[in-house]
Image 1 (cartoon, rainbow, N blue to C red):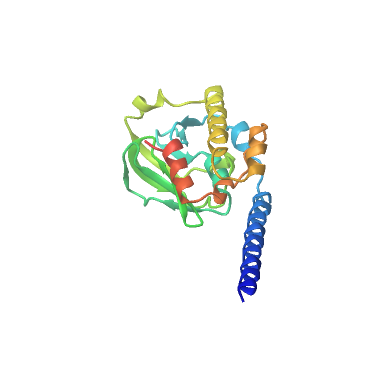
Image 2 (cartoon, helix red, strand yellow):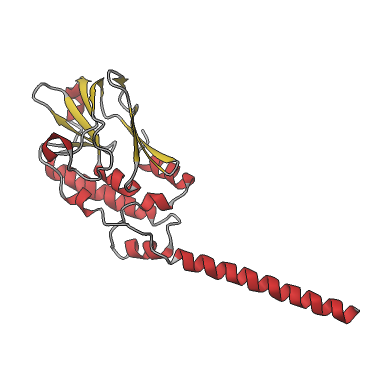
Length: 224
């Protein structure tokens, strides 16, 4: 009887080890599978349209002849979230404070809040750009704007905005920061090695991360 119990115990332990090892091997195999449908973000960092200002809030603006601002979100953020995404916008006529929530990019129950670079009133909302992830779109293909804003004291703000080579250099620096930040998160060994070797950050990479990673990303890059 005792011998039978010993045999049963040994078999049970072997079975437990088998299933634990099988589970661990399955996890390793899943981690090595590349994320589907991810493409480079190079267009968002190499093709900045002329006449566009960038702000540290990952927003851009163009000053119209009448003094109003067309304001949008840097396409790098759309590319990191990946299409299709949701876009929550403020109502027309609302008043914005500098650093106040401007738009929310959503995907899979998670979101990034982008903040306003200016104080002003929303004069028009452009709801026709859903799905755009680059600089192309409305306003003759000069970048997809979200709001037309009547700004207050824009003269005080514009001196801290970036254009042309300064804007391109800033975008490249932020892209490098993004690469370094994302390589510290649980995005899978293949993607970490790719980015560490100088490879591109794949579009849609944020979709592979959990709530805590989204919150950390927002606090690091979009905090105020």
